[in-house]
Length: 154
Image (cartoon, rainbow, N blue to C red; front, side, top):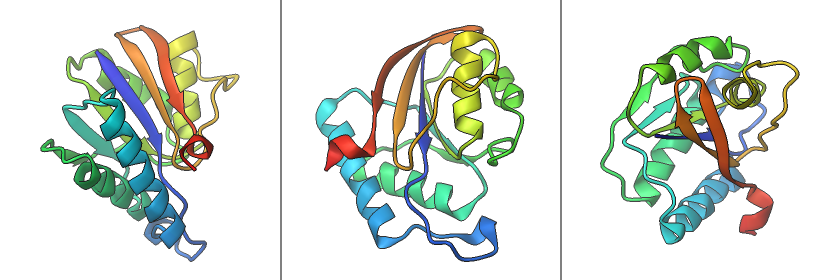
């Protein structure tokens, strides 16, 4: 099974935080990522989970459209920036589907660290805005397959 961890793209600095929307640059970042992933054929989620924050919802929706995916987009509790990564790790441990998770730092870096090393601290992964990290595994055993930084996409 695979899990793809995707940090939302660039968002505006308006308040309140949960309503921040993607900037034009952020929408362009997401479209470039979708184009790259579509060409690579290395991204095949069966569901896309996203946080309740608007910028993550927008990133998930743009990826789904850009990749021409016909998979459910699900708002999942536990994906806010400061949420405990153990909650999502427990959900992944009982899941048998390939999932794309669109979320935030520092939670995604801590989740990746937890899945790969068994502990969320110290954080071993930092996700840049618009980056994707692919992990393969089941339950408690995960390895890194690939990582795409937005700087690679132009």
